[in-house]
Length: 394
Image (cartoon, rainbow, N blue to C red):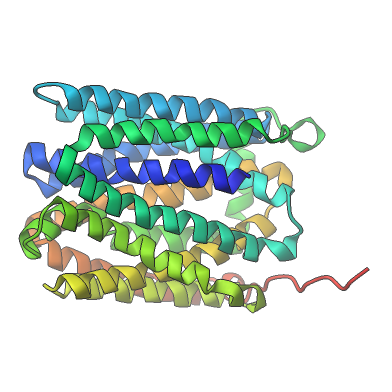
C-alpha cells in the first residue's frame, strides 16, 4: 500500500523534475542556470532531511508523511500559478522548487524508516528491489510523458498534474495504521541529530554507503546537461529532453524487473561497487556520443547500475542501523541520495559552461568510477559486508 500510493505521486513528481529545468532553460537559455536550480534546492533538502529524520524517530511516521503530501501539492500548485502568468519569473521557480525539496526532505526519512518495520531482515533486499521496480517505472513514464506534454501544452498543465497526484499517496496513507516509534521515540532536536551522526562516524559500513553514493552523484549526475544536450548536441526539442530524463528510469526499471538474483548476493559492498562502476560507464557513453540512440542506451545502462546500487545500499543501511536511529540515518541517506544530484547539477553546469556538455558528462562518469574504487579500497568493512542468510524454517 505504501509503495503503490507513492508510485503514482512519484510519476507526478517526475513531471516537475523535467518541467522545472526546461522552464528555466527556456527563460534563461543557460545550462549554468539549470545547474544552479539544483544547487538552490540542496540546502533546503538537507535542512528538511535533518528535521524529518529527528521527527521520524519522535512522532507517528504516517502522520508526518500525510502532512508532507499536502505541502508538496501546495508547492507545485504555486508553480502552476507562476507558469500561468504572462511573464513567469525564474525566481519563483527557484523558490518553489526549493520549498518542494525542503518538504520532500521531511517526508522521505519517515517513508524509508517505515519499511523495515513491516518486513524481516532477509526480505529487505527483495523488498527494495520491488520498490526500485515501481519507482523506476514511474521515473521512466513520468519524464517521457513530461517531454511530450510540455511540447504540446507547456509547463503549466504538467505542474498541475503533479499537484493532483499527491492525492493517491494521501489515500494510501489514510488506509494504513499509525507507525509509532518504539518505546515512545527519541525527542526531536539537536541532541537527537548528533546521536545519529556519531553512529555514522564510528560505523565504516555506513561511511562507505554514503560516500560511494554521494561521489557518484556529485561527479556523475547528468541531469543539468539534458536541456542543452538534447537541443544543441542532439538537435532535438522538448520531447528529446524528456527522453533523456526518462532513459535512466527505463534502465532502472529493466534492472529491477530482472533483479530476482539480488536476494542471493551476500557480498553487498562488492556488488555496490560494481553497480556504481556500471553507472559511471553508462554516463561516459552518454557524454562521448552525438547519437540519440547511443545516448539513451548509455543513460539506460547508468540507470540500471544506479538501481542495483540503491537496492544494496538501502539494505546495508537499514540492517546496520537499530530502529530507534533509522529515521535519523534515513535522513542522512536521503540528503545524500537526493542532495548529491543537486550539487552534481551545479558541478555539471559549471564544467559545461567552460568545456561543453559532452566533456562535463564523460569526465563525471570517469570520476564516479575512480571514486568508487578508492572508497572500496580504503574501507575494508564496507567491502566485506555480507547480507544475513535466510533464517531456517521454524
